Image 1 (cartoon, rainbow, N blue to C red):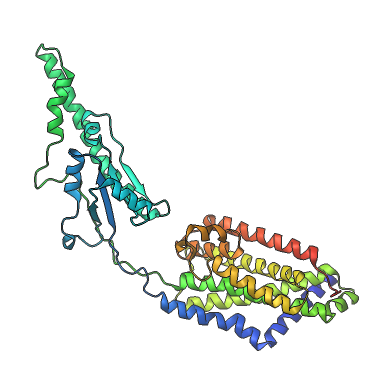
Image 2: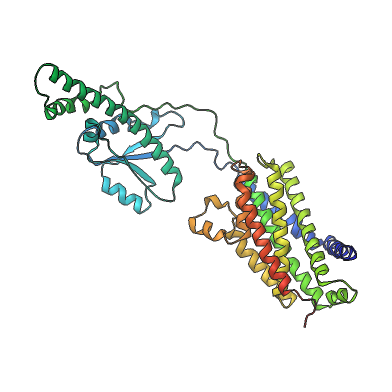
Length: 414
């Protein structure tokens, strides 16, 4: 109990020093809102426009049903499209369209195979080809939806073909003649691949507008990003204070006063955690009241993720203090690591808009797991189960940083 009391006194001492340092208070609590406010106004209105989706379609048939389908659904007059309706473009050169996708000049396209008409008419089926850039999930989803619509109509055509062929065969047999399947197919095929009437469409779309497209509130991803950045930044700069106390023998005097090594570590960790708690309380309060930030459908998950982030940053701070030998080195390391990990971890921009390589490297930073967790909760409306892996990752980082800190911590500068 005595050691717990000493640890608490050490934490309170660090908190009082933090409160007395006006520059530290300004940097940790008020300076971050300068960036948050600036990017809030820069990003305001982004995503509010109803951008028209453009779908490209091609065929490898020189004639037949696929060309008739394309003729029926291709956009002939863009001005007559309804709000939210997609523009469909016919790429008549399949190979050229494929090269455009490979060179990333085109997001993707849907292609009919060379035997599409024959496969549908004879009833053995045909596979539609979706050629798309691997990283463009939006184009893939849209083209898959178009392919499913065409496949559903083609399936109905297949059933009609089989039924027609079956009836013709039965009629041939009923007349007492041997049924010649080849002749029946030859009679049926032209009927199934006929040109539709001018008022008939092989594929139809029902477009319904549920409401106006609203822009995402930029504070939902701007403020959490800068919260993560400055919580880790302030904690990292706190490593300089720990090194200073080691150099001026404050930590040695605490040991001499019967405080254990674990007590000193616990007190420093608690004090750094309390500073982080003050930061997140201020950030969320100002974000909700001033920026109308939406903390999502699971506020408890946001709070828990915030606390785990603070605990990880506190362990990170002590680990940096055990690595640096001088206060100047500690500050330099703190600034360098913060300026590298913050953008890499998605603090300056949402990770869901970054390239694949950046999302890969973000997995090796606590910043990346924290910001992605906040994005899931506050931008996409996810719940606790969706961010549980992010929470486990932060716990893992905290354990790694804490283990290194305990292993290397020393009270003496020698």
